Image: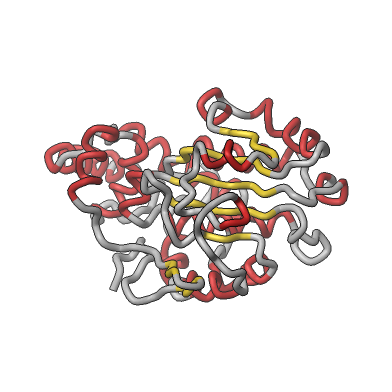
Amino acid sequence: MPQQHSVVAENLFVQMGEYVLRFESEDFGKEYEERARLELRETPESTKEACEKLREILKADAELDVPYEEENFLVTFLRPTHFYPESAYERMQNFFKFKVKYPKYCANLIPSRERNVFEQGILTVFPNRDHLGRRVLLIEAGKKWKPKLCSLDEIFKGVMLVLEAAISEPRTQVCGVQVILDMDGLALTHVWQFTPGFAKAVVEWVQDCIPVRLKGVHIINQPYVFNMVFAIFKPLLNAKLRNRIHFHGTDRQSLLNHVDAKCLPKTYGGEVNIPEFPGGKLCDLLSNYDSHYEMRNQNGYSKKT
């Protein structure tokens, strides 16, 4: 049985052609231990010390209800903040304050309640990691997105659910995540869905809240009207995130310079033969962990702070 705040399991998977997608609960091997040491300052000693310090900070915060006795939970926030307890605490505060600030995105957010966005086939987690061990999430927000059938808010909530599963994986906590946005077919009917308020919420969540090492956002197949969308987001981006956004258009080699061909389907210049499969299968996989999402929803702040 996974820990209370894990949404992973050993025996659940989605078959994608000859490949298998599953969320990994096991610890990483020696190769990733060394990467964690070099990139994140992670050692058994630093982990123990940082967890003890973060635990004391959390015990002193009567308003924030989190499972501070669980080391796995603490490490989820310590890894992306390089094992600095104060920074981990700040991100944790932001993460749970976001849930209170934006109930329309976060209230009762569990996979089985968000089946529609998955059924549309807009979100895909590739079964293979890239050459640096990073999870790769594909968002097809053009041809597959029918605004009358699926709202922009639903897409955001689906992304939140997928990434919350991914950040429960120890290897993803160390290696990070790559996101590919396929904008092929984006039209004015899509562009009109984007508002400054939505952009503010998304950027706040990505930059300040979610405990993930976001290593790259790759925009592909973008038509000219995408500039109208990006103009809403661009003023809100800090330098770190702005530098990790890459525009590739239809240049597959440009994408392959950042994302390994061994994890990409042939459609994107890769080597992997992944057949299209019903998006509901990903929802089925995530829905196995509804109870764990529900437990996470019970933590945090009970009122605005």
